Image 1 (cartoon, rainbow, N blue to C red):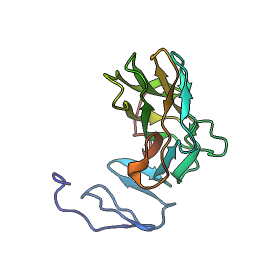
Image 2 (cartoon, one colour):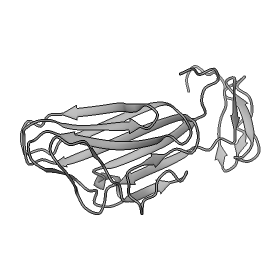
Image 3 (cartoon, rainbow, N blue to C red):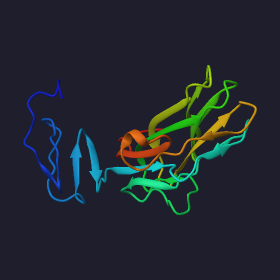
Length: 202
C-alpha cells in the first residue's frame, strides 16, 4: 500500500477487517450497510464469485466448430452465479458492476496442425477476450488462458467457448478433482470486484 501514507483505524465490516486510507471515509456495522470511500457510495456491497470446473469427462470438440464448454462442478459459488446440475456453461451475474472473468482450457493434443482458441463471450457485449495458441508438436498439451475485466450490467451472462482447427476431433481435458489446485485443468471463474464507478459512461 505504498503511496497512501499512514493508514486509518481499521473499521469493522461484518467478519471482514478492512483498512481505508486517510480521507477515504469510514466503514462500520454489518456487510449490509452502505459506506463511502474514494468519492464513491457503496450500498450493500457483496464481494464474491464462482469457480467452475470440468470434472466428469473430457469434452469432445469438433474441428472448425465454435463450442461452449459445459462445466459440471463448482469449487465455490458465493453469489449463485451458476447452476451446476444444468451444466449449460452460463454464468449469470446478479448485479451491475466491475467483474473479472478468467478461463483456462487444457487440450489433449493429438495433432500439431492448426490452432487452439479460447474466448469469453458476454450477452451484452459479444466476444470480450480471447487467447490462441498453435501447438508445435504432439508432446505437449496446449493450454489457453484468457482473462478480462470490465463493467457489466446486472443479469449479463458469460460463456467460455473454444475453437480448434486440427482437422479432426480433439478433447478438452477434465480436471482431476476440485482440490488440490494443481489438478485443475479446465476452469472458468467470475469475480465481483466492486460497483459501477461513479460517472461511468459506456
